[in-house]
Image (cartoon, rainbow, N blue to C red; front, side):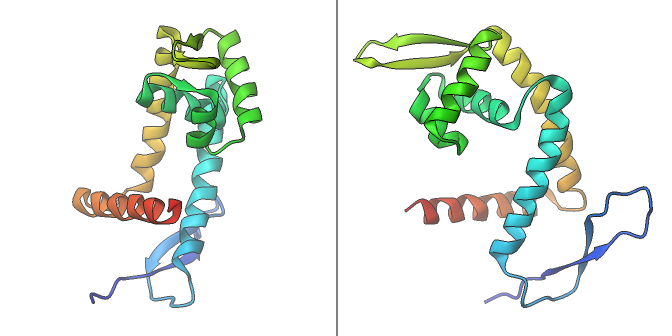
Length: 166
């Protein structure tokens, strides 16, 4: 088995930088992978929320737009599951986005009680604008990491997700 370097957080000495840890290559055997992933999740959520706010979107709206863009059409329940929110929250998100003409609703032709959601052209345009803001965050996150290594990390994270979904 190949040893992997662990990261030890240290506080930045730059008074203008945010009070977030910067990484140095030092082994910290007590730092659990789940903790590091959780920390990354919290930082990404905060940074994405801050980046999306000036564009008039919440993180839940951005995620729902991304899900609909990837799937083409989806029910409220499918959007909720893939957006990590409750169906009730997804319904509120969809109502807000429908009122802004970012999504359209139509009955499912195969099931009378299901409503299918899909992006409008306006919703796609909003999503493309948001993706630029998110790409800037991803670029900063991957600074100093080679493309092949970043691809390997993504592959492993996707495996973690599959393994835990069961």
